[in-house]
Length: 376
Image (tube, rainbow, N blue to C red; front, side, top):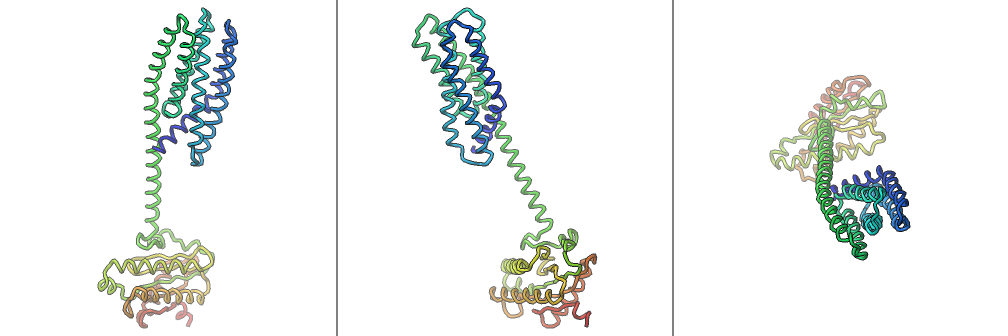
């Protein structure tokens, strides 16, 4: 409902903005024609009120458009708009009164009468989807005209009053139909916007899942091999870590997959937080599958990469302790290898995998570097 109201107000404001010059021109034409009638002075006060209302309406709808544009509250402006709508209906009613109170057989008289009814019809049609604007306008117009006729009590007052009431009743029925159409259009616009937002969210989620592991939020295997994030590295030589959580199958078998998943999430959080401590934004971590993780380090020095790997190992060991894991469960065996620019990352991962198995054969929960052994 709030979105619908905003859209209808925005639409009314846009129409008012586009028709402001036509509104001024029509009012000026009516007032100009009135000066050819014998009772021209009777139009002075309504003419002044009419231009005041045009000025105030422009302020109201300009503020409404601005407030809707920045999602600011509009209630104060709307309350002021209700007052301006009352004045608007009053101004048209007062312009119509001299024609009905002192009818003369003059072309300008008929033109003024018809032009006022056309203008009232257009304004009523535009504002009908906003009852708080439309109802004060139409009631003020009819009440001011009927009150003036009642005070005069001339020979044609009853006929004019009855005819004007019928015209307003027909205009009201037409306005109801216009309002339904405007509200339906606003509903469709709101629904289309929501569908667009849902589609954007779905596409964003699909893009996230294309690169991210849904459990841990780290990059997935596809991001490593297809999107090749490592190609954004600053250094010509970087390093790759391969992490395997020790005896993770026993963790699932003994404590259940739910705890195993929570353990993996905690380990991923540790990896992510530790990476954030490094300078630069080209490092990243990925879950390759199961309990196996990979970390790309945009560090050229093997000593720095080994120190980082040892830091990660110690933090994962702390996570295992916090989860009350028995000794030897949920610690990390880590293999480390270099990655030269232009080299397929699969080659580096293969070397890191060899180092990882050496870490497992050495008793698990330790770091082994393939580079160090090759250098030796």
